[in-house]
Length: 591
Ligand code: MV4
Image 1 (cartoon, protein in one colour):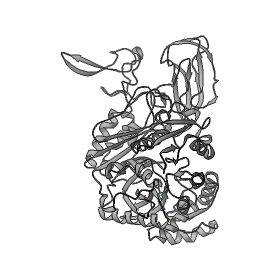
Image 2 (image 1 turned 45 degrees about the horizontal axis):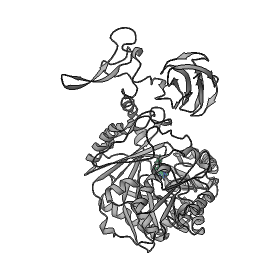
Image 3 (image 1 turned 90 degrees about the vertical axis):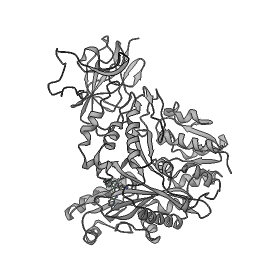
Image 4 (image 1 turned 30 degrees about the horizontal axis):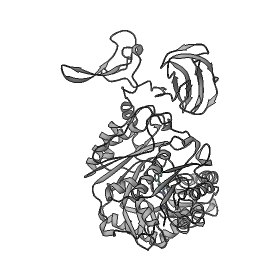
């Protein structure tokens, strides 16, 4: 059928799909934007084509260019990955119309579950439990009150074309109906170009459980277990695991059978995921994702199936080579998404250039990453650098292994969410498996632990005379010691509120030192978006490495931008009060 696959994606998923292709003896073709010219997925492919400048909106979404590259490169199939065009039935159609194979579901099946209300109707028809609610879009706000009386408060007003929480409003009492309806409609019109809304009974403390399905082109459909994706922030998943600590084998069979019924009902082919809410022992269908998902990895670790290779083999016309009875979970897997975000600054993106980068390894540790040392994270795309997955004989071992792997993960030059994950992996509620989608908002105490775990002395070695404690590894009489060296006596030796022996949190109180300003050999680059609050240098000044030159305000925090190296400042490129993007050149060095 085809011997070459074009991967219409970037980052870790592009590399991941390419590995599956290689293992099947298929050639790979990468596409890339100018911002991704040096990206790892480009170098790994057998062939690579530039598809345009700048941000993803002009590149990885350009259907005609992608199909043109497929033709020119001899690709017989296109794998969309996730995001971008993965759930775009127009793209699937265009690929098929070009005589190429789309590695994914038929466009008709995509379209039957694309809208949230259509999906609910298909689920109901397939005897899949859905959240109590309307099966048609609302005609006007007047319809909401009787529905609220029927379901009881709280209710959820949702966008028909919605997803990811956009257009979702929760109404707890009658006088909130009107404003919530108008706000949901406005957001839906802006986000989805359709203000159509519907109503459901709101489940206030659910888990987010999803079921993986695999369907071949010969009518065979199986489910491949479930994933618990409840640890998320603002509808962005951060930690996923399989199996769910809340799902018994009986529930697993019930949910899996319902997912298979729905997949069959809509003529699904390839890998797909049914999302459910689970509360008080009952599950309710929410929506279907017609693509491979970021978190497919935990399913693969527990069931021993390469889901992307399965997609490729299905696309080649192969029947499934296993039955439902063959699919038994073995052990437990957890995935932590490694995002370049600052968990102490509201998870704001903290992009920049990677310095030292060492991935954890060992039995039961998998890292799917799209970066390498020295790589600059383009500001145009999402902040996920990698996914860290651990497998254990049971959940306890998977958690212990994740703790060890997170502690081993070395990422210099960027702030990441690793301290957040380390804090969660030691939190009793998470360890006890008793958590819902409200886990993060319910545990604000995580922040304190994250702050402590954010201390990485080796990475932020303070200057000699800073008064900050310095850390060394020393060998005494053949024995190695890690010692903390603080200035003895004199100003700044210990802050009045510092507990003896505990490293002082790096200037976090209202100030943060940008971990490492992205390097420009001849200038000072701002690593974040914000407003220039202060300029502490001038043209002609000789500055030292680490000296604070600028203060940039972002997300109500003052961020000190330091000199990446010693040298003479030739000119200042910004003024106080200027709004700047991440990557802005603030000053140039003379030489
Ligand atoms: C819900 C719900 C509770 N009740 N619908 C979130 C976005 C999209 N995946 C659907 N989502 C939800 N729909 C009803 N009727 C809970 C969620 C939900 C959620 C809601 C608020 C905060 C975080 C959440 C994470 C996952 C799911």
